[in-house]
Image 1 (cartoon, rainbow, N blue to C red):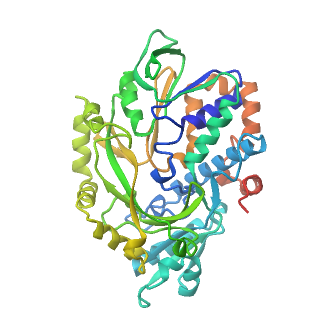
Image 2 (image 1 turned 30 degrees about the vertical axis):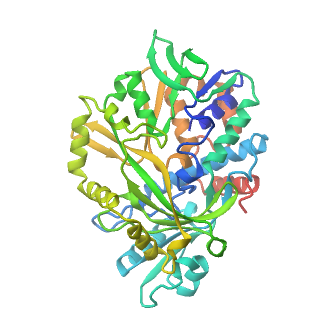
Length: 474
């Protein structure tokens, strides 16, 4: 997220001075690292939780359309950087069909209804539905092999999907930025404190290998994944006082056996169990990690007091305040299904995780898979007039004067980074972004800027053709 914002700012104003502070010894090693996230280019092609079904049976497509257009915006941005020579298109993207797979008549009916509604929109016009077992076997052979022939199954497919190595992309951003003037990354550096010293400036105190350091700056962006909440609390802005966080650790089963990786070429998402939260959506994915193909299945949740994978077990305790403890308890009482899910996940043995895999991939062999610890996600809890509210998406928090912004939350996260960073610019740099010079540069960077892609089929198709060509997505 921080690398995306820094890249946009440098494109809009090459003379701007930027410092990125990183706790670890390299870029993209925490939430962005390939093993720490699903690597899905979230476009709502296959993620069923982005099209909720109401109690009246109606499916709401609004969130899916918003996420799809946000991902197209990210593709457009990356395309422009490739065109300018800032990025190499083959380092972080791999074309991969996005598939939804369900079993049981109720879920099959839901999937058919979802496809019928989404395919009316140009963004999802290519989505195909099938109950034909032979066709499904061509789409996802590992999912179909060994499955009970009497089981009612169905799937949808969108061929234009991608796997994204966000760690590699982050490194590419940083390498490009380092080749420009007035840019610095301070690795192995920790923010000890940050506070406003006057109406226009902040002081950031750092602990680094070379000793303590103080930075004076007019603007701060907190894009530290789960660690952003702790930094937001250090800032003491009143807009951050209404937030709390609850960390959820992640785990995957990973397979590198070529006999399997060569057979599966898709991201296949299912439906969570009844009563399970959206974060538990099971999926069997082809992944490229360090240039090598592998299979990933999960996610499995756990609990750790850490806000970051390489954080402290005391992070949760240190984040507790008088004004946010009640919100955490209220959310727990309102979301007993989530509490139950986490408790069950914590009690899972290795054999239980493998049983979940077998439901998705009937012929799976335990010896082909290993457990891998993924990144931490901090579920955001927000105090409202009606009590604590659990926020499942991403949330931008800004100070009233626009001098500080923080990004909280998780999915769809990195896939929609460009849209989120544009929101940060509109909130914190509103006078600059409306200027002629910035607007001219922004339109070159994002030719469709200011347009509603879901209301302009011609523009969407033109934008996709450009991205496909520049990013080798054909």
